[in-house]
Each structure stands twice: as C-alpha cells, then as structure tokens.
Length: 357
Ligand code: 13P
Ligand code: SF4
Image (cartoon, rainbow, N blue to C red; front, side):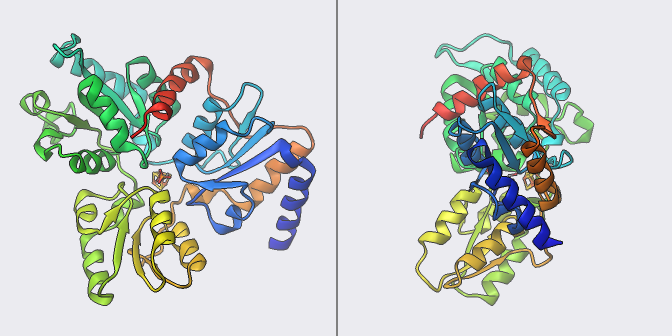
C-alpha cells in the first residue's frame, strides 16, 4: 500500500543518510518528488550531481539521459541509479549516433572543413541535454557543446563565436525558437533531412543556413496549440501564458513568454497574488505549482491530462526497491557510461557549464 511504501522509503533513506542523494526532475509526480533531496530542471540537476561528493549513490528520479549526464559529471566512485530502466525519452531517441555521424559527413562534404578568415569552423554541433551520452561525446569530439532549455541562447552565442553555422539536435523546436529569438531568420534554419524527397532541405538552403535543425520533438510539448492559447485568453482576460520552448514556434509566438521549467517556476513565484497563469508544460509540474500557489489561478493549457509517460515510469515502488538494495550493499539499475563516451561527453558538458551569458 501507499503507506507501506512511504514507510519503506523513509526507513531506507534514514539508514543510508548522506550516503545517498535523491535527485528529482520537476516533471516527476508528487509521490516521488516528496522524497527528493533536490528538485530542479535538467541544468540544475546536472549541477547538483557535481556538488554531492559525499554521496556513494545518486538516485536519479528522471529519465535515462539525465542519469547518464549525472554519471558523467559525478565522481569515479559514485554510482548513479535510475529507479526504472524503462524511463527513457522519446525525443532523445529521435537522434542516434549513426544518423548524426552520417549528417556530419555530408555537411563536411558540402562546407569543407577549413575555418574562415575569422577562424570560425564551418559547423559547430550543439546537442540538447535531452540526448544520449554518445551524442554529447560526438559534440565533445567535434568542437561542439551541450545546451539545456535554460541556457540555449548563451550556448548558441558560444557556438556562433566559433562557427559559421550550427547543427542542432535533437529538438527542432528548441533550436528554432531560440535562434529566432536571437534574430536568425527562418529561411536560415533549414531542417536536416538527407532524403530531399521527404521534404528535407536543398543544397542552396543548407549553404545559406545559420542553424540546421534536426527533426526531433517532444511528444508532450508538441501537443500545445495556438487554439488552446486563444481559448485561455477568451476565458480569462489578462491571463499570463507561459510555455516551454520545446513547444512549436507558433505556440511560443502566441504566448506571453517562454522558458525552461525553472523559468516557469520563478515567473510564478515572482508574480503578484491573484495572477492567472495558463502554462504549456508537463502536467505534474503545473499541478504542483497550482497547489503551491493557491493565491494564483494556475492551469495547464491542455485540458486533456498529458503527463510525460516516461517520466511517469519512476514509481515510488521502484524507488523503495533501489534504496533497500543500497541498504543491503547492492547497486541495482546502475547507469554507467563507458569512458570512451564519457570523456568526450564531459568535454562538451564542461563547455556548457563554463559558458556564461
Ligand atoms: P528542462 O528541465 O530543461 O526545462 O527540460 C524539460 C524537459 O523536457 C526535460 O525532459
Ligand atoms: Fe522527453 Fe518530452 Fe518527456 Fe522531457 S517531457 S523526458 S523531452 S518526452
């Protein structure tokens, strides 16, 4: 039962003390978030993994790519645990290393590999945090960098200083929304698709490109629509509409502001009492904010409840199991990135951590 699980988790946590740290992403359900020592967005959780050297184990309540990142950043002797190994991310799965290597080779053929007069290389690869570790490794090996939704503009600036253009993967929407806000015209953001008959970019478009977008998307955020925003504005005059930049561009354009989950949390915390918010992001976060801020009216733009199905795979039952195994001295569901990937991935992550606005 729920109470039994709660007692088991609390008992295991008490026994383990400082030896374990539980990290939780904002999209985790409340039944899991209540046990987290630290809750945040993907950037904050990556930083958190760097700052808990006393912990023998980091239990990551989030999805696979986040646990991989924590393993790359955490110390040698620390193990990172993902309570349910089936907690992946459909967006991260939309770019694999072979397709990216193939795109990279074709772009090298098109642009050559020589820097221009200002020393800028033809293309810089930028991967969204929401990608597998080998894509971060690819970026580390090829002069590239990682970004999250909270630092995408800073990272794109970093890339434009060093490259004539950017190959951005896997999320087309974050890439497009961020570059557009920085003044890059849409016609300079072709989609990468080597099969032109499937609507991919032409050679002329690629030659003119500033940002080449991969075709990935988040299945949760692509559900939000301009029609939902119009309905919210009609029903609640004065409503503040805030959406995540993984939403399609017309949705971001129709919103009052767009930003990472942490941006959304801070915007709500800073608003005067009595503000009405319509939020375009994952439902667990929106409902938690609605409960935490009863002085505001907060609702999700999508009235069909739409949790991220893979985030939801972290159930308190799995959390109890991995903690109890730790108490017995066993590490289960460990996420361990091999050194050949982790070393270059760390290079790309360190570039991100050092990039400042
Ligand atoms: P952030 O935590 O960077 O806002 O990302 C949202 C998300 O989709 C994580 O999977
Ligand atoms: Fe992936 Fe979207 Fe779920 Fe984040 S919310 S884990 S990007 S599917």
